Length: 328
Image 1 (tube, rainbow, N blue to C red):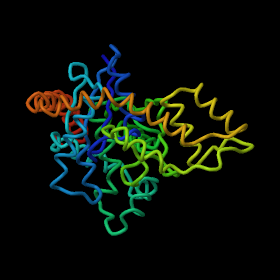
Image 2 (image 1 turned 135 degrees about the horizontal axis):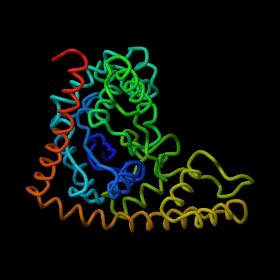
Image 3 (image 1 turned 120 degrees about the horizontal axis):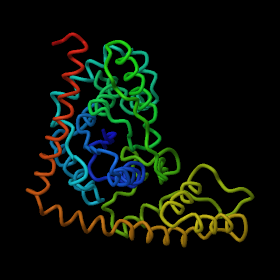
Image 4 (image 1 turned 90 degrees about the vertical axis):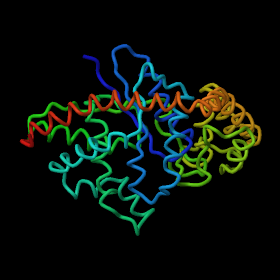
């Protein structure tokens, strides 16, 4: 039996470089393996755990699907679907998972604490249960590999804990999922601190950004005088060097590091070359996306077919869990 892979990205609209490098590139690598069955989704239910615009959510969900396909997710190899198309099954499983999960464990997670700081007036049960929903996303397919960024590791640890507890308590047979890491597993913010995120303006580059927009976003990245006795390991300069490594290669990064320790980096030149390198990688993705925007029926059929494949597996898992828990 093939091992399964599951990954999903929140319905925030157009994907950014953090999504692309941290998750999508891992999806592309795994979907080409003959020993794996891959399922990828847009997690629109997760978007409802913090304040959101209900009117624009469907458009944002659709936008992520288009980005997936434009990046190379192949519906012939991977099931591609929208999380809420299984809203009768995934939340149901997350409720069963709540029977083996403590409130204290959920409150202890760093992501929960961060969201509480961001939205102190909107600390809901949905937000508290976010890790249970993510665990259900993964375990409902008994997925053992999850291509996501390193920032999601605390949630994966919760999924592993739940798998163990469900197996021990009820005799289920859930695998303990592990993260599939990519070279861009942590993509830094252009603003200088933390990771690239849609919630922090000025920190990200969208996959749909044109060259001028990319240049403008990079221009705002913080720098220093261009030279020093030690290569920075955090902050704006360290982040720029990481982007150089990801888009221009390690040799180019080492060249800039040598300049930093010597005659000094000319950041204007670095940012211009980096913008060109990023745009060159994004150009074929953008061209493919424009084509897909006009193929409404084709995309609709992909989503429908993906949901049907996902539902078949998910229904079997939920049925098994209900039997083990004495609910049938």
